Length: 396
Image (cartoon, rainbow, N blue to C red; front, side):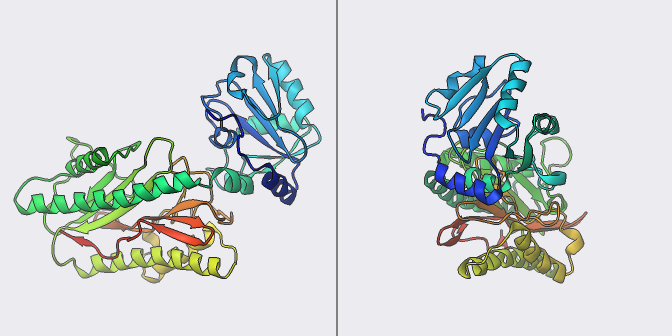
């Protein structure tokens, strides 16, 4: 098992802290409230007592850890200062933080909830001990949200497999319905999960599967025997949203595929599909153009690009969520999101991060459409997964 902070790029951190005007990055965790901390530190196991680790701009790291939880710090490349009583903790913190400007996982006004990981009470405590707190947003992007080479390779394999599993499930549903069998949303769910099992992928939740009116609910979940588990018939829109990866805690792939049970969708179904596909592609095209021109781009700007296509198509009021979310070891990660709607995420997208692109249009009581791909921003530019995104509705 690797030692804490093994392989960490301290030189890059020193420069990032200088750019931020901070004396150090203070990582806090308690019972997993801040997933950024254990990932950056490389710690294994849950911190059941309060943990603070200072990664300073100058000098060696310092950990303030409870006496009963020192085991994970074997090989720590700095000083470990044990505490037990709360008075010891406060005294240790005062010595560690007084007079320093420290980066912490906080977000002003909770602008980005996925970044706002440290409780307000902890911030109050640190400020009372003489610390000045700033947001660690650029550090989280640079050191926590970026994928390793192994994670990228695992994601690529998962992405191609997910595309196959999704298309197989939609085509199976159409074929079974054509021969007169009853196919309900939960049956398609099971088909997807069986596909994952065959190829060795794991997920943390069953996929979203919806037919017709149920596709207009972005977070619809079918449940057998509850009266919402629709049967597939001719003329219905089909949505399958699925996510999985090589293992829990790995970088998952996350996709949404759309089908139609018939040969000829009506004009509005096609119009809505064209709008969401166009919005998806507009976000990717802007990212490619900015990257090629060596110009920065934020997730908020990509959200604006996608939302503009849907607005121009006349469906602005029917797109009630952000365009995409960060993906790291959590499916909805701590890195930059494609969002200028639910939040104003002005973090710059940097090489090494990944995210979903998933615009949608939802016509309540009728049908909805969403198309979802993932993008890894490599040193040479954006890489879309799967390599062949959905271009047309699957007619089954």
